[in-house]
Image: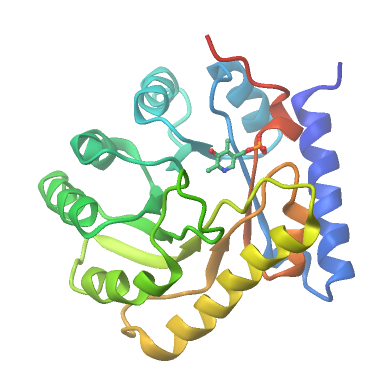
Length: 234
Ligand SMILES: *Cc1c(COP(=O)(O)O)cnc(C)c1O
């Protein structure tokens, strides 16, 4: 079995190669290891390899790892990438550095209010449903500008860009269409949306499609399986 450190190395090399193939600078694309379902010890393997930001899709699980690790490793930052119920806003406000899956005004308001009380700010990305699949979370591309306008007034949320999960399909053209939708939306927001927000971050691409995402302008790829191995749900 290969180690987490070896896997991180090989994924990073693939990212660099995809950047060069796309005429992009490798330092423009960061790797967010996704540690969901894997224990704190796996996170520490990645910390030893130099990574300090981790993606988690469940608040409860992320908070457990934060509680376990934050004293010994205050440098670790937690990024929430999964759909958030508004009743989790208080927990998120306590420990998360970023929410990449912001998808409603209600969630934004709850988060902003809780952050205010904690005296904290966090980075947020608007999650967009780029495939149109009904089971996917995220706002429709056409709804993103309106959400962006609402967020502009919330000081505790620093808007950095957009996030998506593309369709899971062997048909590369369908996957590419999702990423293209995101690039087009990013362009549109840069022109239309309030200057208080930045649209530079494009979080897209997972173990199966990150090279394609990089060809379409991804600045963050979220990779779980290719780093930590298969996930087992109990
Ligand atoms: C689990 C997950 C990932 C990582 O998926 P892999 O296919 O294991 O790389 C990325 N993004 C989100 C939103 C996820 O939930």
